[in-house]
Length: 270
Ligand SMILES: NC(=O)c1ccc[n+]([C@@H]2O[C@H](COP(=O)([O-])OP(=O)(O)OC[C@H]3O[C@@H](n4cnc5c(N)ncnc54)[C@H](O)[C@@H]3O)[C@@H](O)[C@H]2O)c1
Image (cartoon, rainbow, N blue to C red):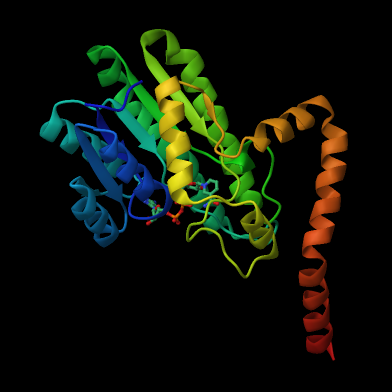
C-alpha cells in the first residue's frame, strides 16, 4: 500500500520507532498522521514537530483504543493504516512478577486485538486497509533476558498471522515487524544482553525506513535486520540445534552477571 494521501495512526509514537515512523509518513506525503502515546507530552511534542494530531491513548485499555479510532475518524473520515507499535519490556524470567506479566500481556498483545476489533469492520467497508504490528525478532526467536517479552512478542506474531489468514481476502493487509536491536530508550545499557543487541543495532530512523518499504511492498514479515530471516530458517530446520546454540549464547552473555549475583548472595549469607 502506498503511504501518500493515507490517514495513518501510530501508537507508542512519542519516541523511538513510533516517532521515527511518524516523521517518515509525513515525509512520504501521508494525508494525516495521528501521533498517539500514553505519554501526552511526548505525543504532543512529536505532533508539533511533524504537523500531526496528538491523541493520548493507553493501548492496554480497550476504551482508549476505541476513543483513538473514533476521534481519528471524526477528524479525517477514515483510517487507512493502523500501526500497533507501542510495546514494553520487563526483565527476568521466573522472578518477573505476575503484575509485570499482566502489563506485558495487555500492552504487547491485547492492544493488537483491541485495535483490530476497532478498525477492521470499518476498513472492510471502505474497501481495505493495513494493520502494522511492531513485534520483534524475539517473537520469532527469543529474548534471553525477558521471558515475558519473548512470550508476548510470539503472541503478537501469532495474532498478526491469524488476522492475515482470516481477513486477507477481505482487503486487510497485515504486516509484522520483527527487528533485533534498535537504538531507542528500550535498550538498557546496564543489561549485558541488551549490550549484545546494541552491537548489531540500527537507528530508529533506519527501522522506520524498512517498515515504510515493507508497507509499500505489502510484505507480511518486515525484517529491518535481514539476518533475522536466516536465524529463523536455522531454527525451523533444526530446533534442538538452535536451542543448544542459544543456551551457549546465554551462558556466555550472563556469566559476569551470574558471578556477581553469587558473590552478593555469599556476602549477604556471611
Ligand atoms: N528498541 C528495540 O531494540 C526494539 C526491538 C524490537 C522490537 N521493538 C518494539 O518496537 C516497539 C517500539 O519500541 P521502541 O524501541 O521505540 O521503544 P521506546 O521505549 O523508545 O518507545 C515506546 C513508546 O511507547 C509508549 N508506550 C509505552 N506503553 C504504552 C501504552 N500502554 N500505551 C501507549 N503508549 C505506550 C512509550 O511512552 C514510548 O513513547 C515496541 O513494540 C518494541 O517492543 C523494539
